[in-house]
Length: 144
Image (cartoon, rainbow, N blue to C red; front, side):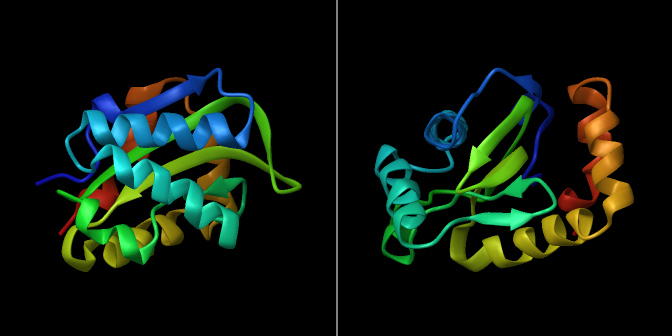
C-alpha cells in the first residue's frame, strides 16, 4: 500500500503559520483514515517539547510516542506552502504530516530525509509546477 497518494499532495497551500500547518496536516491524516482526532492534539504536544523543523525548508509534524495507539495506518501528507512560513525562527516551505503504524514511520522518515538531504532535490520540489509533478518527484517514498 502507498503511504503517499496523489490526493494528499498539495502544491500551493495558503497556510500562513506553524499552527495552521500542523492543523491542516493533521486534518488530512484524519481524513485519510490514518489517525484519530487525538493524534492531531499529540502533534501539537510534540511541537511544544521538540520542534519538528528538520532543515532544508522542511518540517515533519508528528505525534508523540504516547499517541501511537491513535495511529490506524501509515500515511503521509505533503504540503508545499505558497509562501515561506515561520517555524520556530526557521523558514519552512514543506510540511510533511506523518503517521506510521507499528513503527513504519521510521522507514518513511528515512526516505523523506534522503529526498531532503540533497539541495538539488529540494530545488526540484520548489520548482515543481503542480501537485502531480511533486508526487512524481516524491515517488521513492512509496517504494518498498
